[in-house]
Each structure stands twice: as structure tokens, then as C-alpha cells.
Image (cartoon, rainbow, N blue to C red; front, side):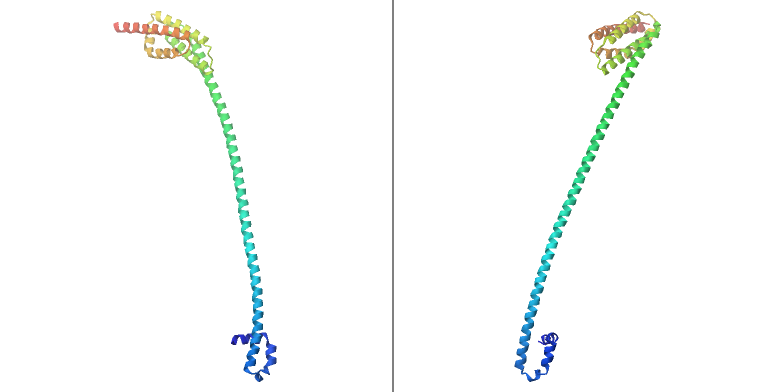
Length: 249
């Protein structure tokens, strides 16, 4: 009650001052009634202000909730947009990288095929030249004692020529057949020769010559197989004769 009285003094100083002179002449009951009326008026005004403040607070909270919702929505939209942009950038980057890799892979494969083709062509040229070189080498070997070397050159020329034809998938074996006939004719001269040096060289290279003969037998051509098979039998007989002569010596 003491505090309410002080408030009334500040709120209604003139009224209190005006009635100050007469307050002594009023009874306690009358003074109490006056205070009740004033308090009721003050309570109504306070209630009005409180309701006003409650309404303002409600408006403020509504606005705050709206702004928070709007901010959350905008943040979600922003994150969604940024995420979508980053995803698109990632997709574009992957597509670009993938296309670059595929493009480089195709270029690499193309260059690799070109290199392989060049290597095949170079190998073919080397094989073909080796065959021609061995054939040319037989021309100068005319002495009987050198027939073993000439025989070796003819064997090598046939094998290299066959490899060259195989690399180009050429099935025209006429050159090989001619070379095989020349080889057979050369062995006929070797077989009838009595040159000691020639026999000694042929004997030392027995396994080497027979290995090459067996390789030529693998060539799929009936003419070549027939010629080489007959010559191989003659060679085996020839070596047996040499061995018998050496054992009896």
C-alpha cells in the first residue's frame, strides 16, 4: 500500500497537492474511498497498457517468427541452389575430363597402331633383305670346299623368304619351291663330293642343318614337303656314311 501511495503521488501531484489542505478534514473512510477510486483508475490504465504491450509483443514475435521462417527458407534455397551449381560443375568437369581421356586414348591408340604398322613394315623389310642377302651370298661360293657354307646360306634364305611371305599373308610359294629345288641340287653335289674339308664341315654342322631342314618341312606346301623329305633321307644316309668312315679310320 505504501508503494501504491508513492506512485499516486507522482502520477497525480496536482490532485494530491490540491487536496492536501483538505485531507485533514476528511475521515479515514472517505480517504480510503478516494484511494480505491484512484487505484481502480490506475489499474484500468495499467491493464490497458499491459494489453497494448502484449499485442505489440505478439506482433513482434509474429514478425520474428516470419523472418526466421523466411530466413530458414532462403537459406535452404541458397544451399539447394549452391549444391545444384556445384553438382552441375562436377558433372560438367567429369564430362570434360572423360571426353578428354577418351580423346587422348583414341589418339594414343591411333599412334600405337601407326607405330606397330611401322615396326611390321620394318621387320618385313629386314626379313626380305636377309633372304636376298643370303641368296646373293651363294653366288660367290663356287669352290667345292665352300659348299657347306653355301648350303647353310640356302637354308637360311628359304626360311627368311617363308617368314616374309607369311608376314604379308602371301601364299604364292613359287619362289620357295625354286629355292628348295636349288637346295636339293646343291646337296646332290655335296653328297657326291669327296672333298675332305667339305665332309668335315658338313659333319660338324649335322644337327644345325637337320634342325633347319625340319623347320622347312613345316611349310604347308606339298611340293616343298616332297623335295625336302627326300633330301632329308639322303642327308641321314650321307651322315651315316661319314660316321662309318670315321669309325673305320
